Length: 102
Image 1: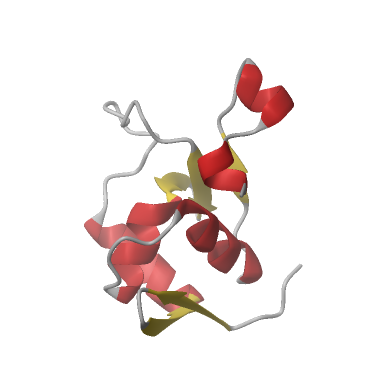
Image 2: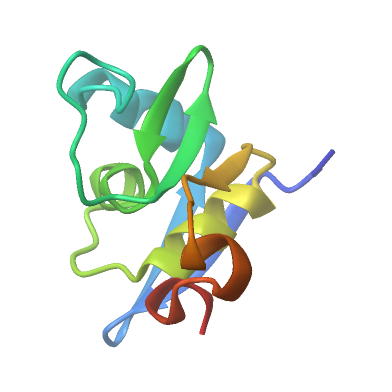
């Protein structure tokens, strides 16, 4: 289990700081991905308390950053100890998604 209390990442030319409290606070402003109307084109999720959220949406809401890359978002959340995983099938299982793994 991670003991990190803060994760830092750069988007554009700005460095942002992400905390567990900011992540939990941002969930109040987002519809969980496990709701009745999930977004069909998102693959990476994070579990916060009892709901799933899309990693990019959550990190952007928690920090105010824009255009956060999927890899950046998932690594920042994982560093804070949040369970992060991908929904994958077919080639995504064997080859990964180059936009998410590179």
